[in-house]
Structures are given as structure tokens and as C-alpha cells.
Image 1: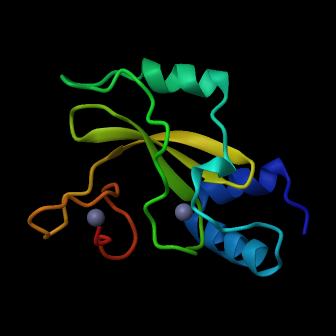
Image 2: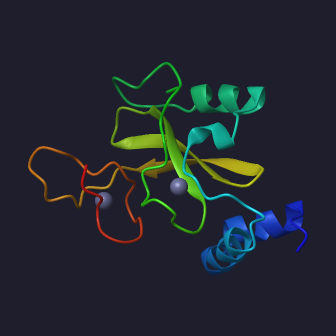
Length: 132
Ligand SMILES: [Zn+2]
Ligand SMILES: [Zn+2]
């Protein structure tokens, strides 16, 4: 199956299609499914865009270098990694699948019931909050 930009763009807009696509690509060996951030590289325009997003008091003024995808290992669908905390319960994330990525600003997940660890994911994530 050819993975062209249109396929990836559709996948980024349609979660069900994304899941089906990613599952198929992983199964057929066309896409590795690690969550490591070495899989993508921010472009210079993306770096500029991340730093240009307005935040609240205490917003980070730098991009986190070593964040990793906090979703369960070997999950299907796009990977996420946090890039910058905005200081107002939101953060800038990169969402990527294969070669295409996009920047998204997401609210922090507030569902974790653990006393000492906040959920590392964003509001509305699938499944239960991961234990750290
Ligand atoms: Zn991942
Ligand atoms: Zn959560």
C-alpha cells in the first residue's frame, strides 16, 4: 500500500481511519510502531510555531528535547509527544504518523486519581490514565 500525503492527511482528520491505517501499516511492516521521538524531527517552521503560541504565566520558553509518546507501548494510531508547557493547563504537542506530523495544543488530562502523579496525557485521550 502506498502511503502518500493524502492518505496521511485523511488519517490525521479521521481517527477511525487512522487506527485502521496504522494497524495495517504496522502489521505489514511498512511502519515501525515505537513511540520514541527519534521518529520525527521538528522542522524550523514548526519550532518557530511552537514558540510563538501564547501561554499563561510560567509558560515554557523552550522546546522539550526528550519527551516521548506516553501512550501504551505498541499502540496503534498516531504518536504524541509534548513539546512545550503553556502554563495554563495546556501544552503544545506534536502528533505524528510516519513522515507527517502536526502541532496541536491540548488541555491537560485531569482524570488521574493517583495522589502523587498527574496523568501525562491530554484531556480526551483513549483508555485509562497510564500509571507512571
Ligand atoms: Zn506512541
Ligand atoms: Zn488521563
